[in-house]
Every structure is written in structure tokens, then in C-alpha cells.
Image (cartoon, rainbow, N blue to C red; front, top):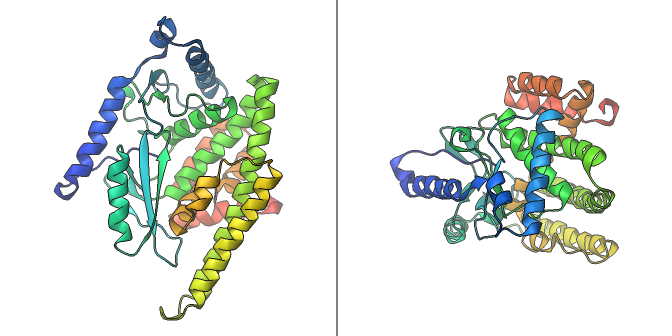
Length: 349
């Protein structure tokens, strides 16, 4: 996700919390070398910071991601999440409510540095009859705009991630600095997710320990199974909403079909969880799943196969891939989306 640059009198309080929250984060950040030289810093944290710097260098030399100030400092925020996102969708649609801002354009989320403020916004949206999801976010990107102030820092919210997941996080956020298209969250997040997936596969093969490779393989297999289940459920919900859009509100058929789809999703997840030996990493998401949650999730995987196919088309050459994505971004929104979906078909991968 990205930090939104806001404006307008009506948004003054939100504008203030966004800017003040970010600058408090920047003030808390110190160069990684300072943390490594500090005798009061734990050995474990120093190991994680050193690994993060190795990942950062790999991003530059192997993935041709930006070589700048970002992720060369670290901040401990003393909380689990850097911001809390609020997303909302109608009762019978997965299309997210959008908020529009001068720099980021229109996006399907609204971020808050305080959880209470996010919950207040969520309550307001629920009062409007919308389904709402609030979730903590471990990192965000300023799109390179803040590199002159030290760049986006490493954070305690993700520094302890398993090695492969830490690499994915860094690669994803740096990808936003390669390209960001206003008004197209799906394109932006799918591109960054493709970079994180492709980049982490390369990093794991070249630099990760056997233990890290094994742990990542287990976790990623579960993630792919869960995402496949989620995609199937999204498709079912979209079918229900499209085919029954003309039903009158008093007709309970659409509500019943939606309930059945969600119930089937949770039963299927329970079976997956059993096959995983009880791994409960997705329990909270599943318990709170609704149209808003499914809509937000779609942004991170719907177009990813198309970007991965484009990477193969460019002979797995990172600079060529980025150039091709930039050229694609010049096309109209619907056209580039259709092209990515076309490239993702089995005959094109």
C-alpha cells in the first residue's frame, strides 16, 4: 500500500493524522549501522537487520530495484502495525468504496495511524449500510517521495518475519517505487505482488539457507491453497451478485445464496486447516471475511499471473520487464487489465 498525500479543508483532520503519523515514524528511524553498533540492541535484532541489508542489496544488484535511501534505516514503533486500513463494499458487491487524493489518485482503502480512528471510520461506514473490514498493515510505501528525508524505513512490524517473507516485503514495497499508476490499485498491487513473488523465488534459490527454503515452501504452499480457495469464493460471490442484481431487496434469495457461499468458504477453510496440521494463520481473516475483505484481497492477486507471464515474455530480464510494464501502464485502464488477463491464460504462460 502507499501513503496518501491529502488535501482539502474537509479532510483536515485526516490530513493531519496522516502527515504527523508519518513524520513521527521518520523521526523514530535511525540508520541500520547505528543499530548494529549499539551495544544495547539484542543479537537477534542485529541479525535481522543484517539480513535485511543483504536482501536490500540483492534487490538492487539482482532485481534492479531502486538503489536509494529506503530500507537502510530502522524504527521500532512499539506497536504491531504501522497503520490500519479501512475498506468498505456494498452488501451485494465486491467493488470497494474509493477515496480520491491528489497524488495517489483514487484508491480502495483509507489508512489511519491510530487503530481507534480507523474503527471510528469503520463505524461511520457501517452506519451507511456498507460491509467494512479493518486490518493492520505492516508497511507502506511513499513511492520514493521521501527518499530525501531518509526513505521508507525497516520497521519492527515486519523485521521478525521469516526470511523469505521479509524478502517479499522489501521487494514488494520497492516495486511501488519503480511504477505507480494513479487510480488503479489493482494494477499497482498486482505488479508489486508479482515482483515480490518472482524476486523472492530468486533470492531463496541464491541466498537463503536450507531451513529458510524449507520454511518458505511450507508457508507459501498454504498461502497458495488459501488464495485459490479465496479466488473461487470471490468468483462465486461475483456470479451471485451479477446474476441476481435485479432481485428486489425484499427477495431473500440473493441473501441466502451469499450466506451459502460464505458458509461453504468457511467449511472448506476448516478442511484446509486440518490438512495443515492446525496452522491458524488465516483464522482471523476468515472469521471476519465479508465483501470488503474479499474485494481488498483481489487487488493483490487478480492480475499477478499476467505480470508473471509478461516477465517470462521478457526472457526474465528485469529491466526489460519494468520497461514493458511502464509501456503497458500507458494504455487505458481496461485495456491493460484485459491484456494481463489474456496473457495469464494457460496457453500464454
